[in-house]
Length: 595
Image (cartoon, rainbow, N blue to C red; front, side, top):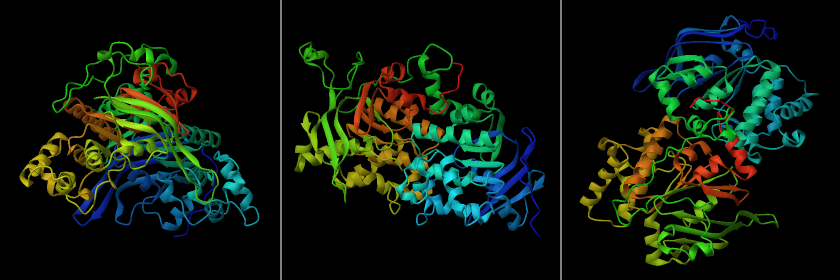
C-alpha cells in the first residue's frame, strides 16, 4: 500500500483532529500477555491541549505511543481505532506512519539525555528531521536549523547548533527536543513528561515556551504527566488513567475542584503542587484568601536515646544565635544537632585557571528532631553541601559541627561512630540499591559491617525495619528489579534506619517517584521522625514537596545562601526575589483553587 497523498492544511480550531475509540494494547511477556490499555476513548480537537494524568503503569504513555505508532516490538493494538484527521492509523503500513510522524504528529519524549544522539551535534539532529520530511534542502537547512532553535528559546542558536548534547544543561536539552518535535510544524504534539526531571523555574520556562510556540501555530498538544496541578494549569481538559483504563475525564478545573472517581480524588489529595497552591499566601494567589497553617505536625518525643525538644518560637533565620540571644536564658536556647558555619567548597577545573566555587560561606543549623530543607536550582550547591555533611567531600573552609564535634577532625573510632549516626537516602531508588543483593542482604549490610548484635538479632532487626517502612516480610527474598520505585525507596529508607541514626540526609528522595508514591514516602518520613526523633536534612528542587515536609528552609543560589527561615516564613513572607521566583514557579501556581 502506497502512502496516501496528504496536505498540511491545519484544521479549523475546534474541529476533530484525533479520535481514539475503544483502543486496547497488549504486551507479550514471558509470563503471558499483559493488558496495558483497555477500552480507551478520547478526543482531541485542533488547537486544544489535552492532559493525560496517572501514575507509572497507568497506561498514559502507552496510549500516546499507540497514537504515534511507536509501541515496543512486543506490544500491539488488539482492538479499536485511532482516527487522525479521519484516517485510521491502526493497522496502517509503516510507510504511512513514517509520513505522519514528525510531519503531522510531533513527539517530545521525557528523557533528553537518552533521546538525543550523544555523538551527533544538536544542529545535525534537527537537520535530519527537516531533510527527512522535505522541509529543507542541503542549501538552506543550516539557516532553518538556527531558526528552529531560536524559536525554541535557545540563545546564540547558531553556536548552539554546533554543540553536542553533553554541552547543554538539562533545560537546554529539553528545548532542543521541543525544537525537534516542532521542527516540521506538526498539527499534533505529544509531550511525554517533558519537564519531570527539571527544576521548577526551568520547568516553567520550558512550558511557557511550549505554550507560546503551540498557540502561535495552532498546534494541538497531548500532555502526559503525573502531576494533576501542572495538568490543570496547562490543559483545557484532563483525562485520568488508572490500570490501563480511563476513570475520569472532563474540563481541567472541574476535575481538580470536584473529582468524582476515588482514584482521581487520591491524585488530587496527594499532588504536592496542588497542596502547595492550597497553602500558598495571598501574594502568590490569583485571588486573595486566608492562608492556613502548614499541615505538618510537631515532632513527638523520641522513643530511642535523647529527647526531641518541645515546639518553640521560630527564629527568623537558621544561623547561629546572636550574642544578645546567647546571653539570655540558656535553657530556652535551641538544641541544634548540626551547626554549619562559613562552609565553602572550591573545585579545581581541569584545563582552566579559574576555580569553581560550588558553595560559598554558607551557615545554618538543624534543630534536633526537625527537618531543614535546602532548595535551589541545579548547580545551586545544595547537593555539594549535603555531601560535605556526609563527609564525602571535604570542605575547603568553614566548619560542620555534629553534636558539638567538628566533623573535619573526626578520625578512627570517632569517624566510624559519626558514619553510623548520619545516614543518606539518595535520589534514585533504581541505582542506589545493589541489584545483585536480596532485599534482606541490602538492609542487613550496615548491621553486618558494623557487627551490630548476633546474626539472630540482625535478622530480627531487618524484619522490624521492613515493618517500620510498611513492607511485608515476603519482600526479604526478592531483588530490587522485582520491586516498584516506591518499594525500592522504602527499602532505601529501611537501610538508612538500620543503625538507628540521629540525622538522615535525604538527597531528592522523592523526585523520581509518582505523586501517590511521593505522598506515601513523605508520610512515612514524617511518621518515622515522630517515632524515633530523627533529624532530616532534606535536599530538593521541588518547593511543593518542601512545603509539606520541612520545618525550616534554606534557599541557595549559585552556591550562596540567599534566604533562611521557618517554612511558614518562607512560604508566606519570602524576602529575596529569587525565593519569590521559585515560589511563583511551582506547577499549578497560576490556578485559583478553592480552599
